[in-house]
Image (tube, protein in one colour):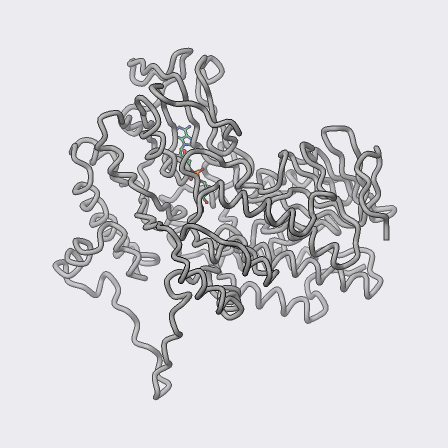
Length: 553
Ligand code: NA7
């Protein structure tokens, strides 16, 4: 084994280079140490936390309950940490990441403020050479990309953007010193998760807020609240069992069922009666459900997620409820999503989003009616009208899932570049490895459940699988591991097959899951929708069968 990482040398020999010190990189480092391996983690930021380090915009918050969106690998950690809210805000999650780094003494092997620019595989000695923007070289047997699925902010090609003289911010790269927005004229472009979370808070802080909306969103109330100490205690008492249920579940999120006793199986062994679908109800019954439960009521009906007819009815009922929440009928109409189905994009949840448009200091500009023309020195010009702004916020999303990997010059066998290999869309085996790139692993890579699940559960599963795999390679004296072309082919086909028939791939759906938010990106559904539990089982079977589909040389 090489010595522990000595990061001040120009060539640093380690067993493993990990790229990124978010939740994936931190846990990976911990597991590598347990294997007795030396490692260096290279991180662009000044601290740990990944997504929760960069996304500091006002209102940034997790959309998964924190008792579940947290590491399960350490019983002591999960017992001692206290969350204060059901779904915590960014500062608390970042604080948690920092606590984990301190508690497991991770920082001594993390190289901060350093960006990886290239990673080359040397076939002669089966080593990766990882080069950074500070000119350092790290040589390692294994290279593990913990680069995150949503880590490259998308700055759209807006005409005149470079001319804007006011303050310009991207939600995904928010300044550490909170900008003072008091009395300022603020504009925000984008109404995805980030925009929807930021808008209500920006409206409270700014003098005036103008929202530039291209696609209205189907957002539903987050119903966040303080976490009651009794609830936290009940979780902690049953954490072992709850974590196990998370691991084998579809999404890694138990939600309100986490603390409920499992429903008894019918005594006669007959399958449980299915809950009625939206199409099983009369129009009056549907109306009554939406009137009682509001626009989020569609979530009660499974057919909305797979039957276009049920989906269309739910969309109409959703729009009708929005008209009740927004006072100005023209604004309400502009906020109604019409061009794409429910459940095609990632579900957005909000706190007071629609109500924000009833405020006197908020204006909505509907870019469907008035396409955004240009950014000027003083603001935004729409349809010949100048809207003056002191601050412009881009909530325009990310080059998701492949962006961070493709921005590094990753060269595998024969000098082939990963981004060239993926020109037609990412191709992986299990979202963990790419053919022709031996000993390179991607945590929550495309082709794995990743963003369709509680990503911490997905991260832990990948980290543990990779750690076991490295242990296996060492135990059996194998120098390299990489998937066969056939295994990749089959896995990609399987990923596509399970996505078929879901709203995610509906013809009128455009989402970052499909890469369609980025100009020129291949339209390919990237995450694995078959469920975390099923995916885990497949990964475990593959390992148990001697790493079926991989070549261990
Ligand atoms: P999203 O969900 O990709 O949302 C980006 C928003 O920005 C969306 O409303 C886009 O409209 C809009 N957008 C992007 N480019 C433009 C241009 N050129 N003009 C106008 N509007 C534009 O990113 P988020 O950061 O909100 O959320 C990403 C994930 O992070 C989220 O799902 C959570 O998992 C956390 P469009 O819909 O493309 O018409």
